[in-house]
Structure formats: structure tokens, C-alpha cells
Figure 1: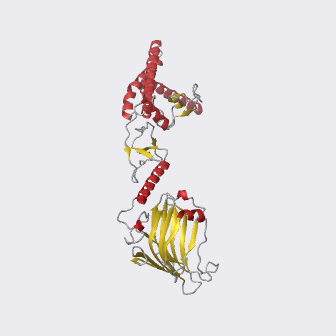
Figure 2: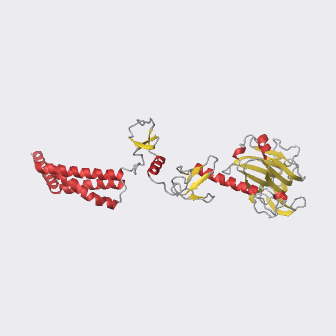
Figure 3: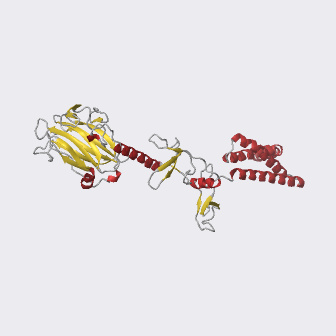
Length: 446
């Protein structure tokens, strides 16, 4: 009996809830429908590019017409139903027409970024065609999703191209915004020269569409600037310079301006002891030379990086190296004095090197025994030229083309954009040491 009473109570409660729901729909159905339709229309208008408040303003009358029409369409009265269907249809047509007008020119979906339209190339330019086609029915050209380049070209074909401002490239020019979008557009000539512009459009003289720069194009532009700078430096010889400085790519290679233009680098500062100074030197053309001394493990070097165009160059240096071993003759390491050329690509990465080297050549040198002096072996990218110590070399020259073609088979000379010149003293033992005098350093075109 108790179970039957419980079921009756639940049935009464259920009927009451249904009654209240039906009553709520009758009394507030229009409001609930409006609250459901309103945000849906607003969302679509915002996605079409409208400001949210303007979208809400436009949505109020459209949603009201559709809700009133829908309410009348559900009426028991035939006349009201017909009127409701007409009003609802009018609201739907108004909504569809508004969305068409707002999105008819949209080539890309503003949310996903996917292409909304497809193009085919025709003799008249790009033509918008249905994306369901595979080829153009008349010209047979492939149907492709729209791209940024296609959209830009299509716009310029229908409008006067905007005036573009030509800009001169330099090493401080900013090519990209913070978000990675291009700030510069370009036209590349067949010989590799570039015209740069601050806006998209067409080249004012050639009537050719400009392209946005990318990382590869920017690197080409910077390489052109670097080569032009090196060429100017090569060809513009100062009028009051002595003959031996004319067309020399090395700055202050005779040390008349002390150490200006040379960068000092030290290996492990906790090991060894180094000294360097510009001294009077009667054998040098300028009467000056850099004198470097080092004792103990580690090293010190002076370096200058020189931009170059091509590799038909002659390197010349006047120098005197010396090296000594430690107290235990034959087994206490060796001092090492070096004059080197390091060949670098446009990014500063090492391609190869040529090293003039002096170290102690005792009877045990270069053997497997521990502590004996030894140097690295030659490879396809590294060539050592052993130099006797205690001897002065006047105008020692290296023909870079011959050196690269004969001794550095693993280096592509065409990739060389810079050459680093190094003056190096170091040692492999705590009592070993080395010295180097160097002057009249030059790098000139053949």
C-alpha cells in the first residue's frame, strides 16, 4: 500500500512540473527564444568583422522579427500561422542578405584562416571558380585554394595599385615586425640586385608585383651590402697612405695605430702568463711591430676579421716566431707560435684554416710518447705550414687561390665571405713558452 501511495505522489509532482513548464513556455516563450537566437547571430556578425556592440545593435531587430514570426507560426490560428511564417521568412532572408553583403569579399575564414574561395589561372589573370572544380572548364588550368599572393594580385588587378615608397637598404634596416610579418617588399633583378619598398604594390617603373621579404631574401640583401662595403674598401685607397698600404683589406696591419682594429682573446686566464706590446722594429716598413710573449699552459691571440669578395687574394706578413720547451727536455711540452688564416662563411662559421706554426722539433716530437711536442695533422680543411724558429721572414706570402685549390680540398672557396687573421702564442707545458713578432700584415687583391 505504501508503494502505491509513493507512485501516486511522484505522478502528481511530475504532472505539476510539466504544467509549470508548459505555462512558462506560453508566458515566456518569446523571451527564451530571443535569448537563444540573439547570441548566435551576434557571434556570426563578430566573426564577419563587426564590432561586438554594433553587432548587438544590428541583432536586436533581426532577432525580434524572427522570434515574433516563429511564435506566430506555432499558433493554432491558421491566419496567425501564415503571418508568422511570412514574418519568420522575411527575418531569415534579411539575416541571410546581411551576412552575404558582409562576407562576399572574404577570401579567407577569419577564424581558421582557411581559404573560402578557389582560383584558376586564366589569360586574363586569376578567376574565382567553385572549389568543387578540379580544372577550369575552358582553359584547363588547375583549381587551387586561394593564397595571400593570389588575393593581393586579384585586388591590384581591380584597383589602382597603391603608391610605394622606395627605401635604401642598410645593415640597420628592420625587415620584420615583432609578430614576424614583413615590413619590406622587394623586386629582384636577374643580376641579383634588389629594389626595396616600404609597402606592397607594384614596382613603379616595371609594373611588376612586389613580393614580401623572407629570411632567405634578407640574407641575400645583407650579403650584397657586405660585398659592396668590401668592394668599396678594396677600391678606395687613401691618397696619403704609403704604397704598401694601398688596397690593403687589413686595418692597421703595421701597428702604427697600436692595437686598434685587433681583438685580443685569452684561453684559460688561470693558466700561463702573457704579455703583448707594440714595439719599435727596424725590419718593418712602418718601424713598428706587435710583440707577443707567453709562458705556461693556455694561449693568447690577436684577431682581425676581414670581409672579402672572392678569393683571388695575396696574404703577406713579416714575422719572427720562436718557441721553447720546459725544463725536462723532450718531455715537458712545447711553446707554439702561429700566424693563421681562418676562412669563414657569411654566417661566421669556420670553413677551414691555414696555419704557419712554429714549435719545438726535438727528436721525440710528434711521437706517441707522453709530454713530447706535437701538432695536429693536416686534413682537407686544415693545412699546417711548419716554420723554423728564431728566423725573420720578410714579406712571407700565401696565394689564397693556390692554397685553397691545392691544400684545402674540403673548402668550397665560393662560400668564403670573411677571413680571420690570427697572431697566436701559447704552450702545452707549464715551463714551455713562445714569442712572436709580426708586422706589415696585408691582404690584397691579385
